[in-house]
Length: 231
Image (tube, rainbow, N blue to C red; front, side):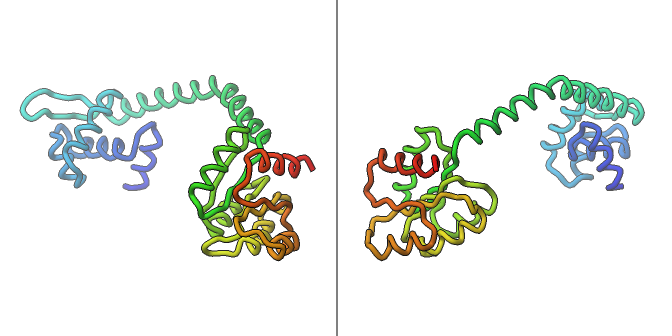
């Protein structure tokens, strides 16, 4: 039975609509209360589905107390649904070219805007950097720690990573090499409020492309990112 209910739901019906139509076929002319009892669902849900089926022309309502419902014969019902499906396919075909054009434009627009991943446990810093770079047309993502950054880098390519040197779970300098595994071409800029020669040397040794100290001017950050991207 489940196999054919799944098949029935392919005819422009939701799972609930397919089950309710099947219940009416097996019960015959009946009330929403009996359908709800058979399916083990709330009567209000059955009323909602019955209204949908009635609108499709698959169910007739007989007024009275209580109202009774009867299903359209299977062949008639499936012909109605096939016609609806054919109309839907025709609409999709008519809109296919426009949809392809729109999707292509979205891809091109995203490619034209470099993507940046900001990795910092300070929410205010994440928000500030995001606002600065979004205003300049960058695609922005944020991560509050190294684990979240690695998870996001597994799923998506980033052109630039701004990495806080002190993160709650992974040392920022160690994270540089880990991010490179997923995005070998990623530009990595270390951001820190704890400047030292040792940190700078470590960052460079691990492949960092730049180093900027908090607090920094927005113009300085933008200049550094643009210079690195240009190279």
